[in-house]
Length: 135
Image 1 (cartoon, rainbow, N blue to C red):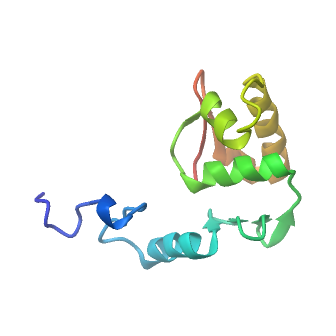
Image 2 (image 1 turned 60 degrees about the vertical axis):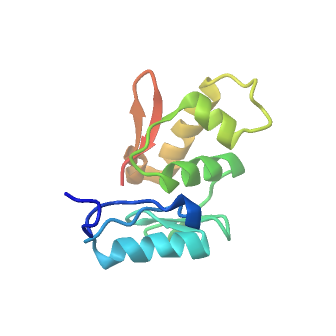
């Protein structure tokens, strides 16, 4: 595949590109990415995480989450399939509390999974590493 084909994923850092949009791709994918960037909304197949209003909606019903649970969920959903180490999550979700034990992440993930019900299985444990969100 040559660099000029439309299926090649290129970033253009000089133009401030954060997202790579693969071509061809379903229009829904591009719509979701654009909505997230413009509105702060992260659609995740039945789960909607809205950073602007700080709401998580699951199958049309709002899920009551604590501040940290919301931040953790939004962080994971923002980069699906990416494996975050416990240390990364501590730094990014608890930035002022870097001395907290990594078990803090485990406890919050457990609570989050419980509140998300069947969608909780989408937050997967990567043994001895951390967590990832699988849409």
